[in-house]
Amino acid sequence: ETVMTQSPGTLSVSPGERATLSCRASQILSSKLAWYQQKPGQAPRLLIYAASTRATGIPARFSGSGSGTEFTLTISSLQSEDFAVYYCQQYNNWPYTFGQGTKLEIK
Amino acid sequence: EVQLLESGGGLEQPGGSLRLSCAASGFTFSSHAMNWVRQAPGKGLEWVSSISASGGSTYYADSVKGRFTISRDKSKNTLYMQMNSLRAEDTAVYYCAKGDSSWPLYADYWGQGTLVTVSS
Image (cartoon, rainbow over all chains, first blue to last red; front, side, top):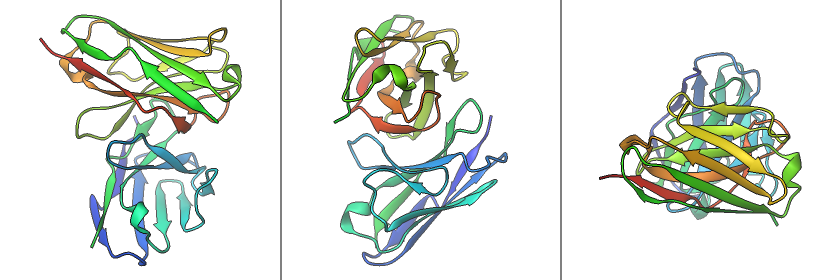
């Protein structure tokens, strides 16, 4: 099983600043990685797939990068609606697995 | 507009069974893989099971293999999860999630989830 490790567990950032979230895989994934956002009481929402492709309707301030085993989600200028929990997910091999999540909170 | 509406959750005793359903609309159901993802209370996400667009390929997490069965009915545009031999650790919100292609990869649309509670 591919273990996904996200860091940090919690990230405190002020609105308007940049946030950088990391995700590391225990095996090489190529670019088969997705990022999701989840707000309290809501279902997850797809942000990024193929490591760097924004999903439909996702603002340009969200960007993904990386390949192999190291991946990054960057939010360039945080808006109030961006404070949430973020998960990475690998789909390179079954079982598909998620990271444990990074909580992005207001500083 | 893509819509996924789960139903069938509820309270069940350990060892019991439940069948979850997910009614899909707003896209060509028979062309997309479908998935179940769960989230235990206060915990992260766990990918539980996937089924290819044709229904010919299915995948299960080790935690549910042999107990859960995923299926789909293209005439009803509905995804199912038959859950047998339920355990306390199966307690979670179960999300139905649409795949972006005919093969399970990532999930581009999610339902609002249905809560399954396993307790005596």
